[in-house]
Length: 247
Image 1 (cartoon, rainbow, N blue to C red):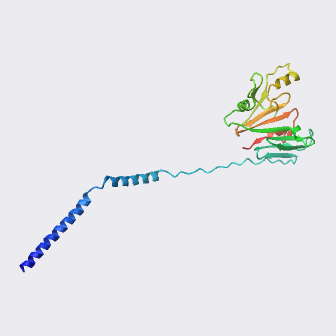
Image 2: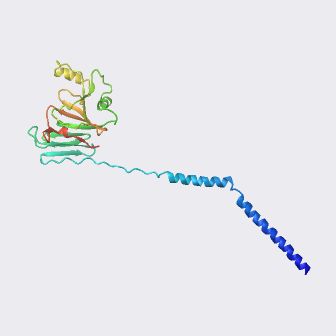
Image 3: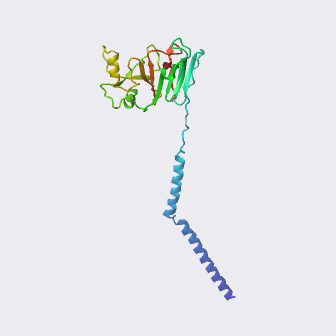
């Protein structure tokens, strides 16, 4: 009976010791701070979460495609409108005219001729379309493209008003021509001799020849070879006064 009582006492003491050790381990684990590595990972996750939350997603703005303005409409069936999609220009003219006659329009390369259909197209007037640097003035463009190697004392580009009088142009239009020094007593021979020192075909001599640019379309400009007669457009103007740049 005494032996059994002693065994029970010993077992009880051992159980108390085991329970005390287990509780102490749990308390010790709970009071031990987390390792710096664990905190660093948690902070890193929190920081990345905050960055994702604060930074808006990158969006690509939609591409805005602009279409050319609609072609003008005329009630007069004698008015014809010519549009060149690849040159990005448009103009109108009267098909039937007292002088020169019945007119047509024909594109050849970067030129569009307006001509009396009784004769070859290249005997008519024409517009020739070019491209330019966006930031360059029309005069600077002419100097770079046409006047390289020419003396400025013999030949130069200058800004002008519309050389065809009485026409109304949008305020965004500018005009220029390539010309040479002139004297009041210059005759045709003197004028021709001076013109020979300038770019052939693009220099104004005794007929109308000029360049035009719509500053709302800064990468386009055109050369007009008109000569000494007019081809009418609608509304008591000339065909070249109806030019529209579409690019």
